[in-house]
Image 1 (spheres, one colour):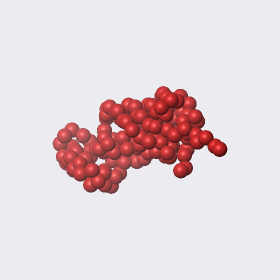
Image 2 (cartoon, rainbow, N blue to C red):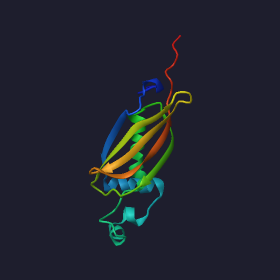
Image 3 (cartoon, rainbow, N blue to C red):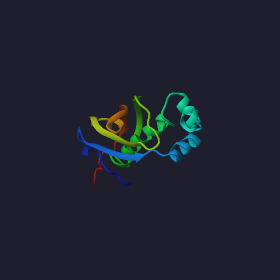
Image 4 (tube, rainbow, N blue to C red):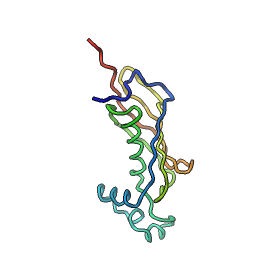
Length: 143
């Protein structure tokens, strides 16, 4: 398996990020995949009636970019994402660029569990923040 980082490679404070621009197609696809067709996500008029400037991305869609950081970059391939605790503070709208950031906060050498401090931001404002737990493989012992 292609592993980006083994447990022994990680250090507190290491961080990675990914970026994505929210599109109407992303929101529609996410709604169809999950079955969450809440009008604030899929209907412009309903979102405005609810007090938003337009359709908003699902919170779970924003959080999915954290999964992308953990699975692709840090710790990367081979890591197993087991926990996510987030607080949502603001919505993301169509056209917003979301930056998802994850930083190594704690490393348990014995269990292989790593706590990642995570957040997503739009224009420098955190839209969600929290922690993720991942299990990271130890470097294989060579014969």
